Image (tube, rainbow, N blue to C red; front, side):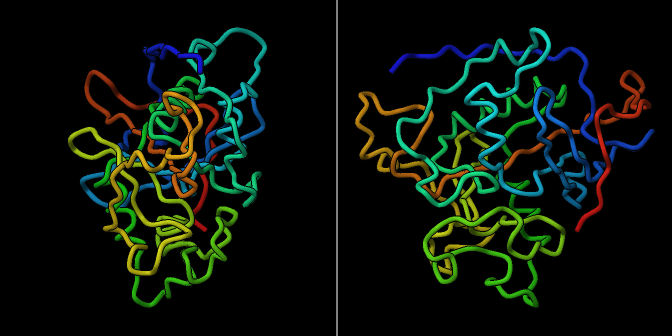
Amino acid sequence: MRSLRMVAIYVISIIPCAVAPSDPVALATTIAISGTALEIELLPIHDAAHHNVLLGKTEVPWELLDAFVFSRDAGSGPTQADAIARPTKPYISMDRGFGHAGFPAISVSEENAKLFCVWLSAKTGRTFRLPTLQEFQSACAQGSSDAIPLNDIAWYVSNSNRRTHRIATSKPMSNGFYDLKGNAAEWVTMTDGKGVLVGGAYNDPEDRVNCGTIRPFSTDWNDTDPQIPPSRWWLANGSFAGFRVACEVPLASPTNPITDKPQEIKPSSVK
């Protein structure tokens, strides 16, 4: 397997993901991905500790990851994104036959998910990364309600037929997010910088599909990978591993006033 070198991208002018003039609070937003016909929907976390962070409304679907992996983001000329290394192409069908367009990207390593965020930052001029554990758990807890049955908002072993389902086909949580519980487990970053999967997945029992479930990485997730060493980008035995993105909103300050309307942004309501 050929080795790849990650190229650091430094964005000099950071454009906020979604802020109203003079208001540092993140707003629900849809951002277009340049060079593609794709866009990504983002929702705010409604608490004081994370008021300047947006999370993906859904898990990242295959068509978005494919644009990155297969360089389907051609533009009219060279861009910052062109300088970013791309993962090696998958050597097996990583969607496992569950479905592709509109389905959550799975079998994705933490390194692959992080590099996707670097690419997405370069494509949009915003700052994307994986959510922190605290951000995920806050959004998940806010959207949880005893009045909403788990079967309605999560795909897990009892209702999934042991396969992932299209994003946004369950009911949304009360704060508008989809699949924070179940479908694909999601990569987040711990306070020590390590990545773990959270939220449970389509093949997990009910007691593992919740806001507090944490699943540390295991080498077993690449147990049948024929390559030596195993792939850095894909998990041969990790059909449950997916992710969603976080986007940071710069806070206004005397030296960094936020007064301009963000470009290529279409505000959206929570549905």
